[in-house]
Image (cartoon, rainbow, N blue to C red; front, side):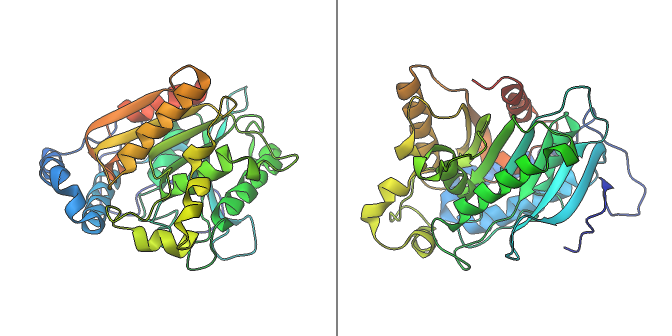
Length: 325
């Protein structure tokens, strides 16, 4: 997509007359799509790639009419030298007297694919939703396995967090309230940064919280995993290293406050690993983290539905950002 880095308000590009929708009038997931989700949910694992593309297409149609009228955006800002070192910044158009927190969203894509703008609506729906609710957001691109191998993507996230910290005064957010939010393979990269002490370089800006939505927080190339070959492209084929590469392995009592959500119908083992992350955090901290099991949703709708009237997850995320625990 060819975005300008000038500030603009987010809107649907269509010139046809349309009903105006805001965060107070969110589009519903139509019954036809609900029926489709119910049909493919139990069969999700039979064709994860095809089902992901189908859900991206369907939810992009649902989200397209939204006008986020309290959001301003700058696209395609560089935070490094690689072509994937680009980010989009979303801020509440009217700043409150208190500087807002900022959330860096890390997209998925099975280590070899994906983009921060997978479609015109996804994943901008996440950043737009947050900004509409008074939270600044940054949609972050990073290097894929086709560009560089482990730990390159987590190093990119570190650079993006540094960028957010350094540009806080320019954009008006609170540098002491930086959150990470991630989906799918993005959680492997974000989780390594958030939990693995190897990334805790001296002077690194501390995180205020971590949000994991349907995240692959354990590294595996098991036969059950349809993306096993892609995992090996990024992490290598030495499975003896995978435990140390796994974010869940590094959770301890001092780990950052974390919110975890996963769908009823997930890519193989992602639900298991999200549950493991919740258990390990609870065991280490002696208190269970906030979690959500999203009934009726699948691996892609779990993130693509944010910005619709099915608002339970979105509201839970906003509540966590306001009071991480």
